[in-house]
Length: 78
Image (cartoon, rainbow, N blue to C red; front, top):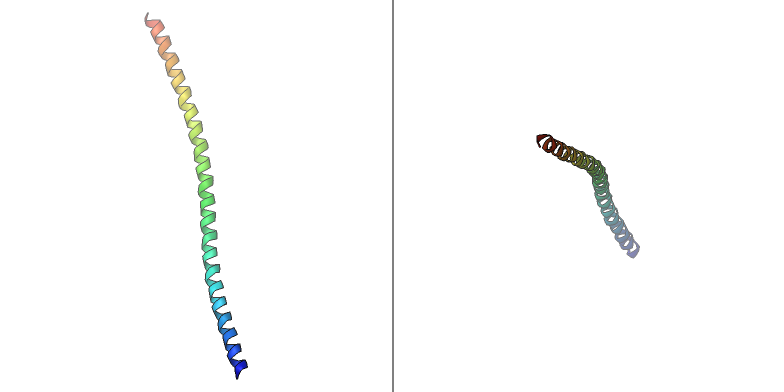
């Protein structure tokens, strides 16, 4: 009789352990998807940062040309 009680306790513990493992694996797959999404967003952010730097360089070049044109225009007006 005592053997059946021990078997029942072990079976109950295994059922609880398996249920916890299944829930944990479900959460891990969600975390895996979230991590992949974050990596994609990080890559997109890096691309945007590169484009922003290129745009900043273009703006600086346009500003330099505008200043040069203004100085030439001022020289012509004199």
